[in-house]
Amino acid sequence: MPKTNGTLIRQRRQERGLTADELAARVGYSNAGSMRNIENRNDPAAMTKLYRIARELGIAVDELLAADEKSS
Image (tube, rainbow, N blue to C red; front, side, top):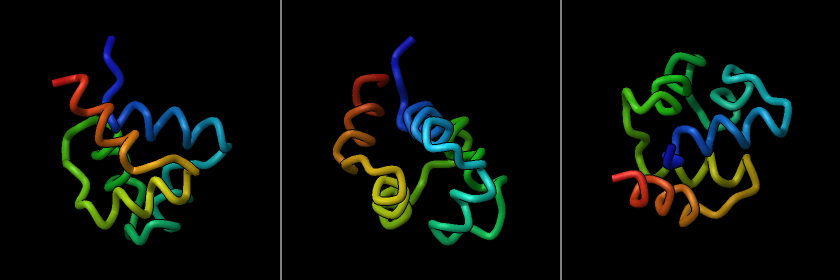
């Protein structure tokens, strides 16, 4: 199965031992539901949030964008 940016975010978040709540708070979301929506592709993240997510997870935003391009 191709990796989407949502599955990549979830994988990296879990590798770092972060909950969806913790990552959501670090990037400026008010609750984990917003993060889960991104991970499940129910709601695309704004570019500003993708930059924050990438920074928190220690990956390049290009990697997140490329994951979605490959899955299209």
